[in-house]
Image 1 (cartoon, rainbow, N blue to C red):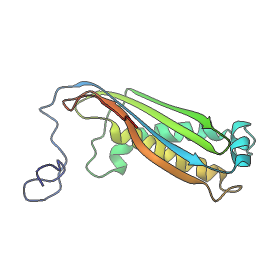
Image 2: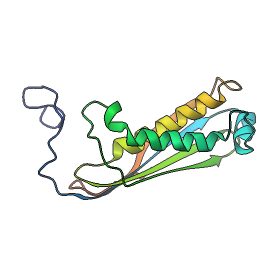
Image 3: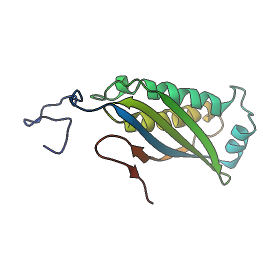
Image 4: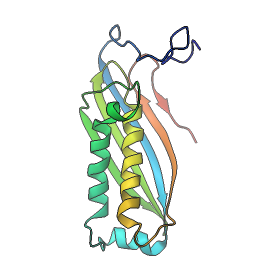
Length: 158
């Protein structure tokens, strides 16, 4: 179990001790996709939902979720996030893509915050649009890039 940092040598759960680490600028970028009917995507793009601007509500939900990740994920450190940015773009007629970039000056990375941000943004889109499209799918939640800390820079290559 020595490779899994959230367990001690006996297998007991623990929050990783970051007190000996240096504070550095850390960044993580995550993405996901929401697949839906073309008519649903058009409603989102044209701001045609009576509930309001779906993308702006999802953006705020993602940012709020990133700030609360330490309360949602066991053993995840609460972090003083310094920047949270969520972007949306459309691919074709049925795919909405979500990208979150989170930064912190701290002793541990913000990968979980970025992954949580895109997840909650996608769930918010589902919630706001389910009345017209219950068959939507949330796909490919993944880390795209991270920097800072001793493990160095990671960029997804596929």
